[in-house]
Image 1 (spheres, rainbow, N blue to C red):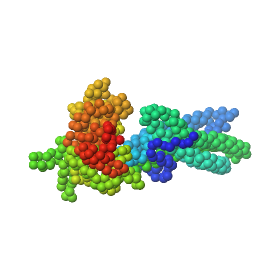
Image 2 (image 1 turned 90 degrees about the vertical axis):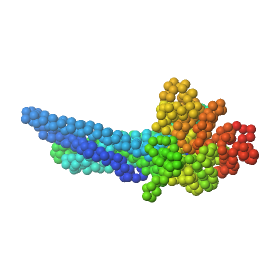
Image 3 (image 1 turned 45 degrees about the horizontal axis):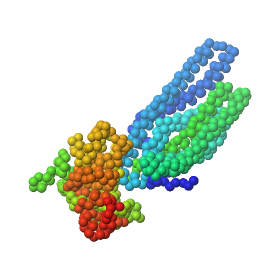
Image 4 (image 1 turned 60 degrees about the horizontal axis):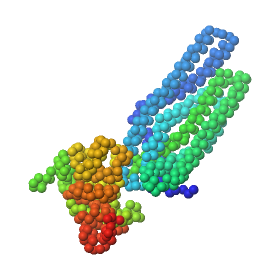
Length: 633
């Protein structure tokens, strides 16, 4: 079976941590606030590890000083001492258990707080990223930061780090005690340790590589699943279920293959380490037994050393087991930090949008409350403000633009829209109509030419203020989870209920809203899945109406509305556009014929311009598109 080509653009970055030290420092910087809690964790880890080591060393005392003398020779004093030592040993192990509980509980608290801050930084940065970033990265990859990457980091922070440190301290402590009891037996343990480390390096190294690929393919699978779920209607309309399943099998097989290899090596590592530890235990037991027979070591020393041997191999195996989890988590953290470090949307603008009042003499005064009248505010060098009334005068001057450096979409576009004018764009798909509206919003900046708004170059206006002066209705309507009232009010959050009702009536959405189960309080979910496409479009128009911005952009705003519904809302649309500079992209003749100026675009150039009657008289491209047709496509 051939490998299907990904439908969505963008590739998931390699999940291999390129800068391990820097990533660890970045994670640590989020935990600085909890340094005293981490001190408690560290003390508790040391206490837990030392309790285990000291508890084992008591075996030598118990056997040599109490059990051997008591065999066949009961002594009440020795028995009381034996009971006391057992009690002390129990207290030590209890302290170790309590310390383990403390460091795990506190570390869980620290890890959840740390991930809380990382999520906030990640989401905040994503809100600041330019539209281009979302155009070049799949939704599945972006969501994997919040699921796969943060989940693996959570597991390592809450358990892995503490266990890793505990294992390290245990290894050091046990090794010191082993040398103290018998340096000869310690040499045997070290020789076997080198064999264990070789196994970890060989098997663990291969496992780590496959875990990296597993994370990569997991992101692809998630992205594909998300896209297919969003496109279910299209899939069913074209009966592509079988093809979708077959393509998914290919992605899923790649994930299965890498996951199998990764976990195969990871799973055989523990049995290998376990068997090597059993061999080591047997060798030490035989050697220690010989030493005990020849009285080079006491029986208690041999027993304690055997327990140290077992304890020594366990944390070594634990460290190797944590290796893949740590690599995966750090790879995920690096992917997260790569997004956080990504350059935000640039905004060199300094001119702001403010509400104003205009007196009878034309004097402009800035106010705090909304008046429905706005001005562009610019501070001079001496901080003296100057105001320019927002009228909606938009001019394109020789604008050249392409989404990619080697791709030119607009080729020297020049046009103007006077305040209150309706400007329509028609032309075939890919001619550059939507690109023009993207540039007005500064979703992208132009490399050549310029765009001015009320005589001000738009790159001097702060992007947030520029966009507040625009209302936009897109072809693909997006509704948020919430009530109908909240979705309309999204256009202006301080709007009153009465203003929401008025906006809905203007868009002719009020009639169908009243028929919903809870009216304006009906909760919409799944992007308004319980509404028809036309109803969703009407809500989007109402949302634009309540924003009451001086410039209105309608990008195929009535494409999802049938002709009967379109006729009903045409008057509402006219009321919405009254007094506003409007840019209309539409295929329907009825939508554009009343425009003050119609621009016909072809391959990024304006080839005709004029009103409907003028363009019909010229009998050019517009005439060909409109003759005998209701749609201009």
